[in-house]
Length: 177
Image (cartoon, rainbow, N blue to C red):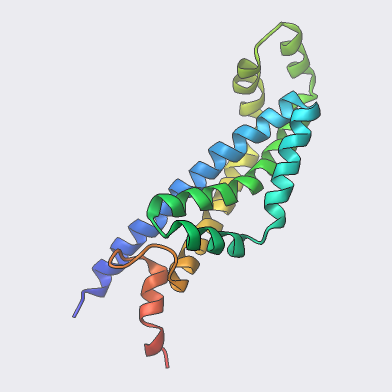
């Protein structure tokens, strides 16, 4: 009864769009806190890193399944939880790369000139950490894409009647045999 090609195209738009938004949210949250932790150092770095370690110690699928069972499977909840989950991985990469750039001489000169933290991050750190973060964005996007499809396959992702690839596979799983 349904046109499968148009349903596949519409499902791709939903799955890819939601994965992109969740990945962007994770990068904004994880990248921002990672750069702050690297620039401020000391207790701020320790507190952010320990909170991140606690969140990373929880298995991702179990954490998201637990939160979605309590808060429901609404689209904003799904995007927020996956974005928070991705932010922990992005924090680690951003903090590591920004810490290496933070100790370079041109950053020390900018600090001696009296530039504010925001200008240091925007002018000195961010241009030098962009390449590794773009590569990480591609990796995180594919993982998020597969994660959303997996959640939809389990019935906790994008809810019917909205089409997405995970729920379409689940609907047609009985026809495989």
